Image (cartoon, rainbow, N blue to C red; front, top):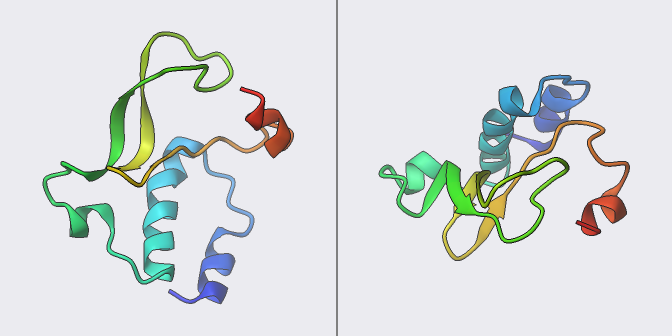
Length: 97
């Protein structure tokens, strides 16, 4: 996938977080010429979607409980969480959590 193809595909998309997050991440993998979670880790042991995690602080507005999930997880590298459009006004608001 080229940068122009990525931009053309995702410009104006109004899907919900749940509807778009996995496909968007897969497209990022293709754009950056990186393996997708399933290609890299077919068993989902260290790179997967919807990984259960322990919440150690307020995960998001309205979060409750001590467990949750991240949209994409790669052990030792990142937990990636998509948020719906307009959930936060800007990154500064998000950083106050």
